[in-house]
Amino acid sequence: MPELPEVETIRRGLDKLIIGKQVRAVDFDTPKSFPNSPEDVKKFLINSTIEGISRRGKALIIQLNSGYSLIIHLRMTGQLVYDDGETHFGAGHPNDSLISRLPDKSTRVTLAFSDGGQLFFNDQRKFGWMRLYPSSIIDEIDFFRRLGPEPLAAEFNWLELRKRLMRRPRSVIKAALLDQSVIAGVGNIYADESLWEAKIHPSTAVSELSAKDFKNLHDALIKVLNLSLEYGGSTDRNYVNAEGKRGSYLEFASVFRRENQPCPRCGTTILKIRVAGRGTHYCPHCQKLKPTKKSSLYRMEDK
Image (cartoon, rainbow, N blue to C red; front, side, top):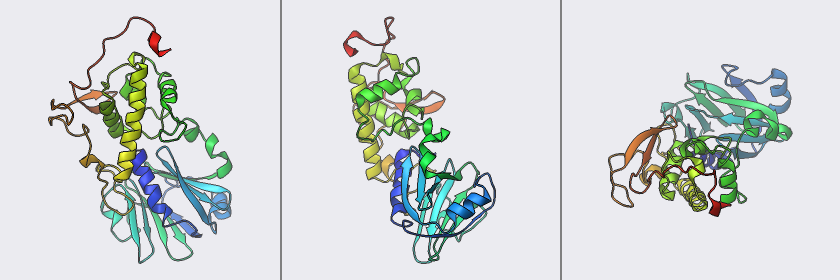
């Protein structure tokens, strides 16, 4: 599943292509991918104009001048492909549908614009969806209401990070970082990379982290996410950027998918283990597991 940097890269690409376009028609092959009432589609989507595109966590939000928005979740194999006969841009799962003639057998939804351009939502496994909601209630939708704060938001400092993570004091830090209700948009790649950067073992209990650990982890998250945005996301097999090119972040990754290679910081062999049910990469020298404290959840110096 694309993580925050991948989805943000997609948003930035589509922002250059579809803003100001009027939706002339919509076609879909299964209600699972487009679970919207015909009345709402006719009244609020058809003939509406796209005013903006934003991101919340791993979801995209296309704002319409009708007062409604299309929320898109690509899930594991979703794609968004724009084509107007001259310009062809693809984003999402990198199979041949990104460059093939569309629609094809994986196309679930097609938005046709009044100028002849089209936006295709392809999804081989049918896990993704496009849902139409009143823009005024988006923050109250369960899907968004359960999301934690955006880690790149200006107000998200290390104290807020500690507050959010301490909702799961007995969880290992890797599991807490993957919990979208704690922090939005962070997945397996950037959890591993951030923990390595902060020198924190992924199996460390949240309650064992010091104030310094939380500060380091916050700085590491910001650094890793921004670096990935700079390079257009990861080269994970389920992602290419808005120009149909693979992202390049993994060329610079420190531990993710680098098991049996030397740690770029100390030279120790990187290991791969399972933490929170996920493949996890770490350096056993740089990221030592702390002994469990028998006292309170916070150290005295953290209060």
